[in-house]
Length: 286
Image (cartoon, rainbow, N blue to C red; front, side, top):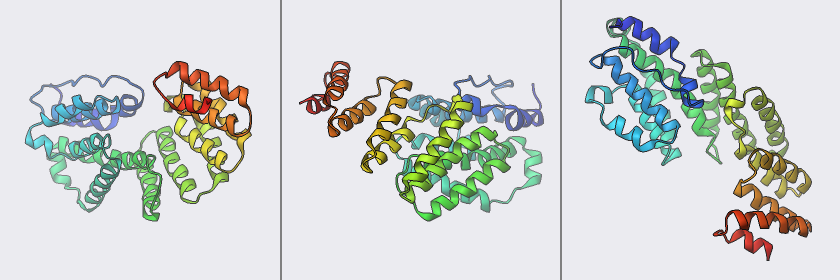
C-alpha cells in the first residue's frame, strides 16, 4: 500500500490531468486501497474527466455516490461546478468565482496538511484548476463586465504560478483575448487574435481547430460587408469540417447576397441532401 505522502506526490506532481481532460488519455487506475481517503479524490477527478468527455450522467452518478466527507472536498465542489456548466455556464462561472474567493480567504493550515496529505492535495488541486475552469467558461460568454476581464488576467497569472502546462495556459489565454476583442467590438483585433490562434493550433493541434472562433470572425466580416474575406475563412472551416451545417448555411447566405447564384445553389444542394429535414437550405435555394 502506498504511503499517503507518496500518494500526495502522485496526485499533485505526477498525474497528467491535462492529458486526461483534453486528449482522451485514460485516467491511471488508483494504485492504493479503496479504503484510502485518496480513493475518493481519485473518484472526483475521474468524474471531472467524464464531464470533459460528455458523459454527464456517469459523472453525476459518481459524484452523488461519494460519502459525505468526500462531498465536502474542494475538488468535489469544483467537479460539480464543471458538471453544472453543461446546463448553465453563467451559474457555473458564478460558482467557480465564489470558490476562488473562498480559496483566497482560506488560510492554509500547514499542520493539518502535514497530518492529512489528502486534504493538502485537495487544496492544491482545487487552487490549481479553479482559475483554469473559470477561464474556460469565459469563452462561452458573448458579453462581459470589466471585472470579468480583470479576473481573467488574474486567472492567467494564477495558472502560470500553479505550474500548469504552458501550452494549456496559452490556450486558456485565448479565452481572454477573444473576450477582449468582443467587448471592444474591434474587428481588427478579432482578426489578429484569430491569426494568433491559427499559429497556436498549428503548433498544438491537441487543442482543436476552434470553429467557433472562425465563425465569429466570419459573421463579423459579413456584417462589415467584407464578403470575400468572410468566404475565405469559411473555406478554411469547411476544409477542416466539410459537413459543418452552420458554416454551409452562412456560405450559402453570403453567396446569395453577393449574387453568386450558381455557387449558392450548389451549397444549398449539399445542405438539402445532407440534412433533408432542415428547411433553411430549401429557403435559401428558393
